[in-house]
Image (tube, rainbow, N blue to C red; front, side):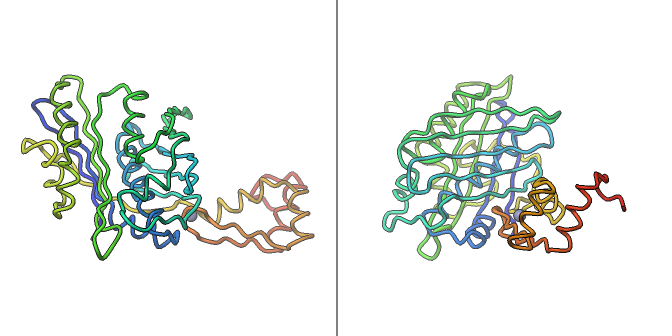
Amino acid sequence: MKDLLLRGLVRTPDLRVIQVEATDLSRMARMLHGLAPTAASVFSEALAAGLLLGALQKEETRVNLSLEVDGPLSGLLVDADTAGNIRGRVRRPDVHFPGDPSVGPRAALGGSGTLSVLRDLGNGEFYRGSVEFTPGTLTDNLRRYFASSEQVATALDVRVHPTERDGLGAVAGIVVQKMPEGSLEALEEVRRRIEAGAFRDALARGATGEELARAVVGDDLAILARQEVSYVCNCSRERAVNAVTALGPDGIRTVLAEDRQVVIDCEFCKKRYVIGEAELTAIARRLEGGVPGGARA
Ligand SMILES: [Zn+2]
């Protein structure tokens, strides 16, 4: 089954709704990164949140959500685009707190740090907003980010519902924003429902798709679009070669003398790129000769 992102609208009182289910891609990320249960739970929350942020981007661009914290997890980053692709990394994949799964993630994150959102605005410009991390979940802190850094009134929830069989039983998130003509009071009502556990409880009783969103915004929801979302890395051999080229001829000669190859492991998808001696020599020659890339001597 594919994870889905829904875009919808509640016409009166003009609320924009984006919801994502990210269970399968979270399990995939857990396997890829070899995450212990608590690390997997926090990372899944970040992946769902990242997909919501990606869907809020206006242009076809990327957005990064990152955490630097003093807890054992230390930090994480997710990188999403508007097309529903996400990837990320966790600094300490082995973090686990046995016992109550609602307590572990908070303990893993700790009590201070920074939550940052880096938005690519297209045209080569970036916007970075951040808030101080305070004790709580990633989502608690992301709500504070929206309140302080974004201009639009926003209600948000992201939940990881563990089952007996799987710590990532269901992973989902929802963001509701007031449209320019919308009512702030209606948004406050959505916030109250979220605070009262509407989204969490719907997820726990197995609700999926529109049903989940309706638990928060009511039955007037009109779905405008559905989009598949997945864990995808855009790394490539070409990028690995570019990274090596950036070492310059002297750097490459040093590598050649010491290891005779460069091994690059992608931190997002764990793919390994090996650039061997012959190719390294060719790159160094090309750089030394000042011949533009791809041209023959
Ligand atoms: Zn990769």
